[in-house]
Length: 147
Image (cartoon, rainbow, N blue to C red; front, side):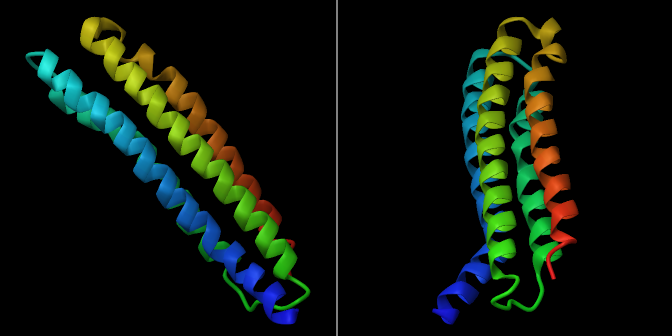
């Protein structure tokens, strides 16, 4: 039973990075597909479409930082905390990354038709980024209390 508890602790350490990577890959893929479609339908402004499609890449960075913050000797006493913080932070990052990719795809589709709303169309993606930053910061704060 102790080995299982320790394994959960190790899973918690690695989960934010793994789930953040999944978030970034899916989010960038969703936005990237919209970007490619927009390039076929417009005569210019390709750089901004590619730039928007890279927005969700930040979630892997947040996951890596959380992973390094949680990285410590895993004991039966701290395994539950590591598992809980790591897994839940990773799920939050994954959810934010996927939905940010969708928001970026919408911004790309809207701005190809009406380029003057380009900046404003990014507001939903920025708000979602803020939610990911909340999960990131709170994971860092709470991880300080894990022995």
